Image: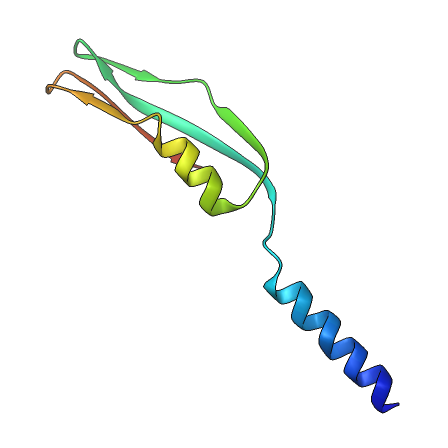
Length: 74
């Protein structure tokens, strides 16, 4: 019985420390030459949330006050 409890505890600990990979959707909004836009969603598959946020943030840009995009996971 003790071996079974130990095995369950070890497996539970490993599962808790494993990163949760899933699909994430990145959406960008902003404006270009003063015209508002919403970009089509980009889907990042089989990634951790941290990795997907990093990739999504690479789409952010800002050129003056009339040209910018703000991208985030939804």
